Length: 65
Image 1 (cartoon, rainbow, N blue to C red):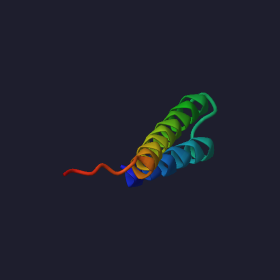
Image 2 (image 1 turned 60 degrees about the vertical axis):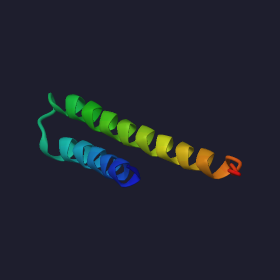
Image 3 (image 1 turned 45 degrees about the vertical axis):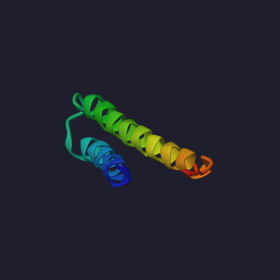
C-alpha cells in the first residue's frame, strides 16, 4: 500500500505538470485540481499506512500462556 501511495503522489505531480505544459488555458484549472486531488489521496494513504505501522510497533507485546 505504501508503494501505491507513492505512485499516486508521483502521478498527481505529473498530471499537474502536463496540464500546465500542454493544455489550453481554459482546461488547466480542471486538471490542476484533479492532479492535486490525486496527490492528496496518495498523501492520505501514505499517512494511514505510516500510522498503522507506528501503532503496531509501539503496542505492547501480548504473551500467551
